[in-house]
Every structure is written in structure tokens, then in C-alpha cells.
Length: 187
Image 1 (cartoon, rainbow, N blue to C red):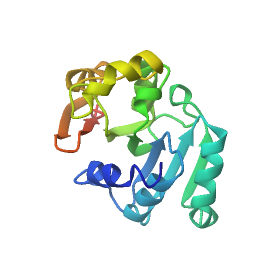
Image 2 (image 1 turned 120 degrees about the horizontal axis):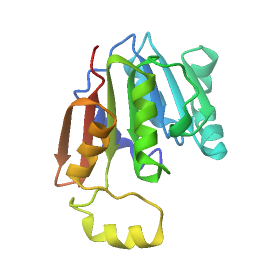
Image 3 (image 1 turned 90 degrees about the vertical axis):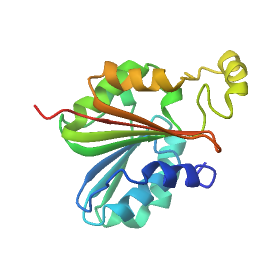
């Protein structure tokens, strides 16, 4: 997964304005490469990663051992619907190639909203969505997996239902990639 998702991750993070001192959460951190990329962008910040899979948590910890030892990165086993962080902790939350596996999209997105600071952003990145280049596989995958395969409007609505504002969807049509960004309103 680390190698396979590297290019879509780079594309998805372009222009998201990761600050050098940002506190960042990567939901569904998998093997940990996105955590490492985020730590490189937030040179004086902190990055937390969560995944519901103990195997993924172990892999991410191995890959990021040096950053963990420096105190810049932490990796925990957790569900997106019950994030183990106080409200208004993060400047940015990322979800790369993961949201379609969440058991409850709305509950997960509400908890992402909760842990973001006012003015914080969520970035959802995927190389597969209904209506995109790989849409012909959507029906098959939906029948044989528990994936929530959304189209563009459903992606936008997912963030809006959680009260995100200024939701912007960008497609990279030739590759079949999608990026959805939302901002937690300032009071």
C-alpha cells in the first residue's frame, strides 16, 4: 500500500497548505508512508496516525520509528468513529484511500470534525470513486466488499452533513483520482 498509494497521496496533498507547525492526524494510516510524508511537510509540527488494524499500526510504527523516537509522530490503534483525542486538537486531518472502508461514514466524519480546530481542514484522497475512470469496477466491488463507493456529489455531501464548509472536490480524471477538502468553520 505504501508504494501503490504514494503518487495519489502526493497529488492529493498538493496545495492543501500543510503548515510547518501543524498538528496533523492521518486516519487509516496503514503502512505509515503518508504519516512520514506529512511529518516532512510539518517540520516543526506533530503527526498522529490511527488505524483499526493492529498489523497496520505495527507496520506504521516500524516505518516511522525514528520520528516516534524524536517525539514528532505517534501511531495508535483506533476507529475513526471514536478517535482518542480531545476536541479541537488538529489543524489538518487526512484520510488517504481509507474512507470507503469506514463502518459508518457519517459518524467517522463527525468525529473528524470534532477533533479539528476551528479553521482546520479535512482532506479525503482516493484513487477510486463512482463516476471516475475506474467506475466500471464500482458495482462489482460493492457486491463483494463492504466498501462505500461514492460519487462526486456523495463525497461532497459526506463532508457537508458533518458541517464542513467550503467543500471543494477536485478530480484528476485521467488517473481516476479524487480529492475532497472541507474546512471546519470558525465560530
